[in-house]
Length: 267
Image: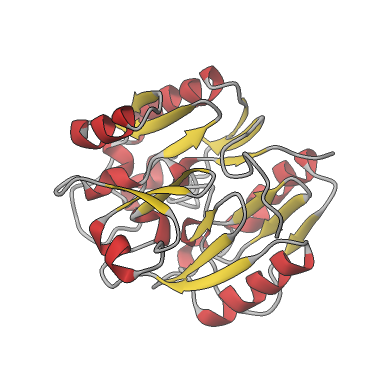
């Protein structure tokens, strides 16, 4: 697809969802203890304020106790200027989340479509650059879903590629982030995979791999609290960074990108 300057980071709107108390029962690969709904909501409020300070109008949806992971709104949908695509998260407990977020997307966009077929795609496996959309195969995104998603994106005029997420990485964006243009932040595992060999890559320092999941929002980069070496890498590269707490989100494998759907609607 043509180069679209700012596609990956120029946003005017975002959708978030208040964490429920049931987040204590959320999915996780490793048990780091149960997150507190109250503490998570306090951190979430800081996150929303950071998006607003970056120039984004945020709609915060009410908590859904029936869906413990529903505050991670990035996984059940993907947004582009033309419209939104409802995805199919690859975990049974999250099967109803796309339907729950659909009304908010229909308020924001004239076009909202569903992922064809029966394959699975988690939004956490989708990395949007300014000229390509990468879809990572993982435990949560299968090839059938990725292929169907790729066809939808190409039908909308976007270039899309399917890549293999390195072993041991939960979501593609667990280990990388778009910084605008053809620049990314990535872990050593992602760099060694060769996925980004034609891009400019900033490497996440050793022992700070969690901090690969930053988000650039307009003129700032949000960075998780507690990762000073990664912040220093971004600062040295000329980015303006803002530190945001994600201590509760991390207990259920969540990060900064997971907590919002960010977009710049054309309509």
